[in-house]
Image 1 (cartoon, rainbow, N blue to C red):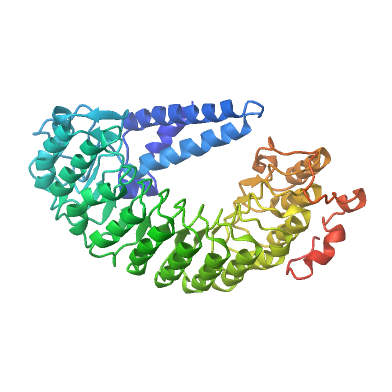
Image 2 (image 1 turned 90 degrees about the horizontal axis):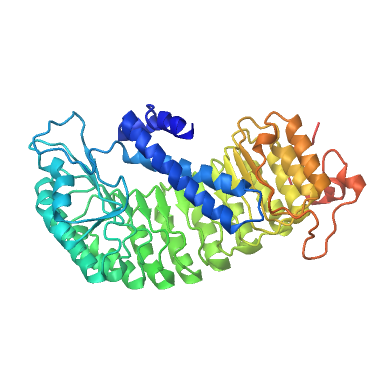
Length: 522
């Protein structure tokens, strides 16, 4: 049943099909089966790691993974060829512009198979502009077979994806393959280049030197999960001659560090047209964070900024707060796990309050934010009436901070779809206020209050509030990690029964709300 629904979704005309092409039903069914199996495998592994859970988080992971993979399939568009490559004289359909051999199982490719897979590129008059070789591992023989074919079409290519195309090969062979591809594609005028997932390091970056040095028109560049160290980052900044047209630059999951961040910052400074920048999980600390934050000030068209999972700390947070007012088009901001603490967080939200009321996504999870920062954060949220997703998970709001944040979201915020305040040490009062804040928002989809200290009575109250609202109980996420007997680590106790039954959820917390501009309950 799931495969049938996914097949329908993958083969139904959508915004993605307009850009990437519509998948046929046979190919859509094949992809749907593969996605379902991969999603089930991921969820099953997750469930086995948490045998005491009720399976809720595994189901959520399954839904998330299958949705992600469906999106990837749609973005790649229809597969022009598979393991049975068409003969050289096969006529081309109008609009055949992408050759994608990434479908099917991961496998080594040798010379004969490479010739077959790439044979559509040898058809006279072909119009291929995009190639995707991801998920297939090329050896030297396969690379040598591919090289003359690539050279023959490089003048018409605009997009090249060679991510994850040397998996399992010895380092020397992998580097040789990269050099062969680099030489074959040298001089192509690309707008899109993806060299992610190849464990490049400096050697790998320099193996692509001939290709990189010839690129002056890149608009999208992806170097993710590539072991980009200081030296590798330096090599990238030296080799690419121009990034002034670059709109997308993604460096996720590398080992860049403070020293490497300086070279990434140089690239950012030279990319005034960036609208999406991702430098998450790159081991960047305070010094590198300051350099990067200051460099971002030149990117005045930036719409999406992702700096998650680094070690910025207070100084980098302050530097970033000074840059944010220079980014008037910002729509998505991901700042989770940056060690900002209260002071850095307050500086950032104060800047956002004035400069980014149009923000749609804000993530500030894992920053040790407590109730002291809640009033400033609440004022900022009150101004953000376009917000669709808010993530404040893994902080220390407790009931005092939770009530303040919840009250700021209660009025307006009609576009809000997701709220994640899991693992924040709050109890019954905080949970009730968050439920009340979202119960009647049109189109709201998910409330995550898991991992807190909500009593059984508090959970019942939350459910009753949601049942009575417009969105029903379906919006409540899993509660498998809630601890009804837990208490905040400072010994604070839950409000007494009289406060807990107070309709507006404020009780003794009224004084905490005096600086928050929100409407009272009816």
